[in-house]
Image 1 (cartoon, rainbow, N blue to C red):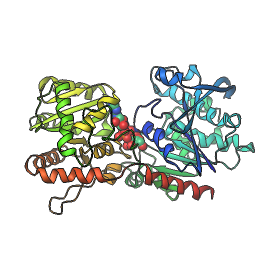
Image 2: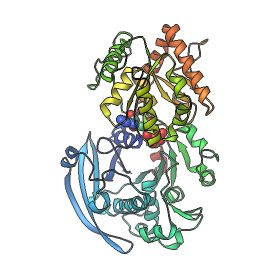
Image 3: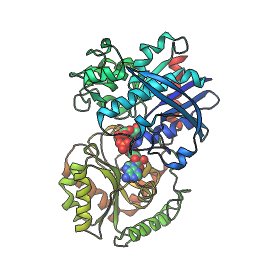
Image 4: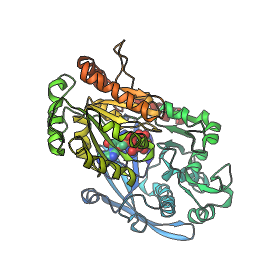
Length: 480
Ligand code: ADP
Ligand code: GLC
């Protein structure tokens, strides 16, 4: 049996702010349980839903040094869908109303979490062969491991993986303060280790010290070697490119399944979507106060409203977009400027645009199931899960060719009748608009071809089946 521990800052269904939670919460279920014992450790945030907090059982507690402080560490556990999940408890660090806040508190919070995740292992009597870390919040795990923990025979020889879900977020903070918070010696704060451009950088620590680096698509793995996508760490990424691999994300095919989804009005499959999917659209139009018209080309967006997702392209042509023969349904929260933009256009084009500025799992499923197309013109996209959810629900993605979007959406070719969506290459608002117009043309004038695009998209397999196998073989390569 090979033991693997996922260390991350979020996991569905317990706590989620983005795709990271989907990955950490679903991937562990899909390993071969006869060969891999994959467990997960995440923080127990006070803002977690009560029903999840109440489902945890207390395992143990101890006090841990973090630099000059001594802190309480509680460990709780549960089993969810056959996966053992541990939670680290400390109300001082994890008491806010959301998982992340200001960087100066987050750096200390996740230094605490990273060290606690290692410190608790002997008490849990679980010795991982591999610790699989996700994003900057866990960047200190490989550093702490190779610092003090390695001197303890329990830890000696444990391998680490650092998976980059988003290189933009690195956990950057003042060098001296970070040294003070982490308790690491000055030895670590040099340009070949945690220092970058004068500050301390937690993700960089992980990228330097992890045995293997992965990211969530092949295209993003090569993009981050360039200056444009490298977020000022392209030099380091290039230096470690022998240890870098791209493994595409999957989605949970049980949670996201139009044949069994209880959130949606009418369940459907690849066989009957032509007749049934439209009933979801009518129900959503009714619910959101849009013109109830089965023929209208309905475009969906479910997203964090940030620059990463290409919203400045949308903002630039929003009036032109709204003057097309479309409906636009948006679900998202984020930057105020985008929230307000969508609210404004919802007011201006009340029967065409619906802005839902909140977070709702249920509404997201309804949008994936009801819309004709799904818009995701990202500036960069390490993988992207929303387009995979759209494909699964027969909603045709319109994307920019970057990162995982490029690897998962095949552009429609009218002459060869191939492709699962529509895409454009340059970060240009009118290129996006032309692509939307082209998709509209196929939808309104070549309905048979449109339906075949859906057929091909729904037939694709973006479950975890093949990617979990890739992680398994990576683990095998690392520990033999
Ligand atoms: P990212 O992780 O960069 O935000 P992904 O496409 O990988 O992007 O994952 C986003 C996840 O968050 C998807 O599961 C998507 O459905 C969900 N999501 C984003 N915004 C909302 C929202 N407002 N309500 C419900 N789900 C949302
Ligand atoms: C990040 C990325 C997104 C990816 C997700 C899960 O949030 O922005 O592209 O799908 O992580 O890996």
